[in-house]
Length: 293
Length: 293
Image (cartoon, rainbow over all chains, first blue to last red; front, side):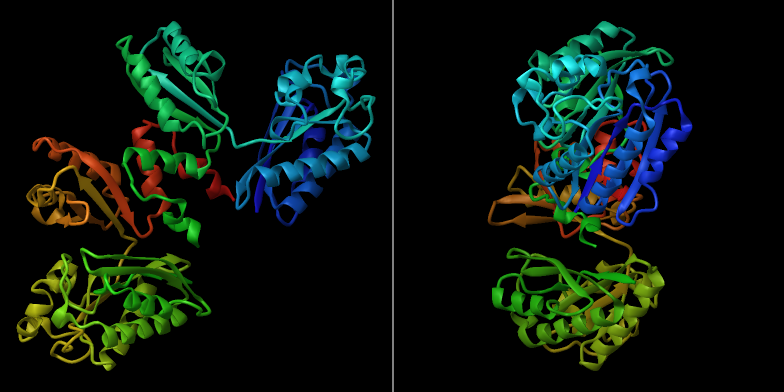
């Protein structure tokens, strides 16, 4: 069973803090640090880690302890919204497991964090109320507004004390599906066309259930791009949104000139496309040689 | 060291024979039966097995004995060309080994089969003459023509008696690279159309370098099928041959109604298709999450 976590920490400038956090994910049996990056403007760092549930849990707890020791939000400034020294910890099912396994791990980590004095709100698929599903709702008011916000019974944490940690704030922890960052490039320099198409395909304005989209301009290439997050590729497939973008672009006489994946994609999101375009009648993941070794 | 074998048996209708063969690959330390399927029209079954060389060899020999006991080619009918009760046994390097290890195993199995009275022609990368590299050349004339064919010094077997086994014919055994069995179904009951298209796409008559193809009739569905082997998908991609079949079918006003993978496909053969159809600009296998586990 392999689960991924992508914890976000409110530390993007002090390299010694970033490395101390990275060390929590290094040299542990059953845990692999795939990637990490820090942003000075955001004053925030993001770690991509995979592992088996138990060792992954121990590594995450170690990183939480390090963050609570070394990050003080009372003096933290940065462009990215944040409410915690450890701001958000998603758990994502990757192999031989499903969303329920990720949810179980989220709750175990949440409970352990509560015992360390850090309030935890379960969010996304782990949310205990619809109010808490969306990270933006949970984080609204940020660290500075947290003391007041937590006075409301709507915002009693799922684990830990009913008031913010004095320097660590609170953390959103939860299970979610793998997210795919997928962009489609248009053969036009008209940003409005990308924006119009984004509006038609995204969930918030009547489009596909699992698509967040916006139009952006690639200044160096002078082409417009539909930039997307696919929040659940098992429900909204890449090929379906890709073909819909082509179809919508046609009304402007615009063609699709390419696409790109940012970061990683689960294998199945890609084999789903091969299966669709090759009109396969009997495909299953069992047919992929590598899954059988 | 993991080697794969995909032996083909001339038994696709009698379930008891198919299961007796499958049993030869079950419950053996160091051997794993990944998949098997039988086709009534072809009257043929295909088994996909991986394992370490020694145990794999023992399992294959057991399956050969079973086939020679239970299959009688003198009364065998089916659409697929065949010359043996065990028709062909390829060995494919999968992990921590190369084509030479597969070749060594092929020769050991060939020798053991010869000692059982079954003539063996080494083919593909194990061939002892250019005449024998291509399975179609080795099999030409099929079971019915084998007695006459083996009178020529060109067709003295590499192992076993110089005349066909009375009910088991002869077998092609050899090492090869991973092969994809890929079939495309046409929206027509005219076998001639599938045959014409097969001719256009296969290497032997001017088509793609790594495609072997023939037209067959799926009697139960009353549709014609282009049945293919892709001998090296890194050179001839599935999407290219699929789109070419669609293009050729159009001249007859015929559409492609589906496709199927028989057995396993390497992951990259499928991601190549996703990459093509989604027009990806920056794809690499590193972007597939599972390759990073």
